[in-house]
Picture (cartoon, rainbow, N blue to C red):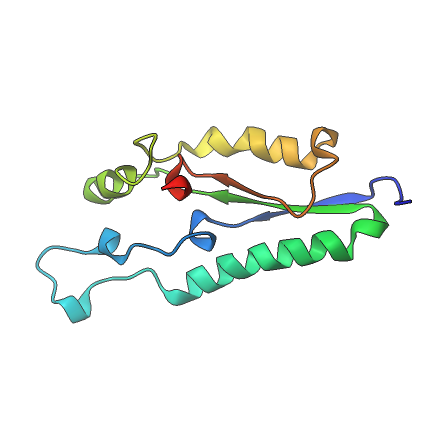
Length: 132
């Protein structure tokens, strides 16, 4: 039988750990194709790796009473260029980017006893982007 809960690990990932970035999202008018900005491969590799790490930690630390979960937030609106905001928002079933405060309740849930039977979970909070 496992020990009483001893702790919680909550990793912060990204929707881009679940799906590949659409490089067209970052294109700029008037820039040559070979000079266009891109979301670097390292971002996707790290965010995907965090999902694997979270699942590994969930099994590794379970007998010690430690839970490990991850939230995978989507884009947060924070004074980005309006063209970028419109492009990214069009990829979301909810039609908008997140407000900075919209992740607080999920974090509170995952670090509380209310989620005591969750471990190894990946919780997308992305306006529905990963369901398309």
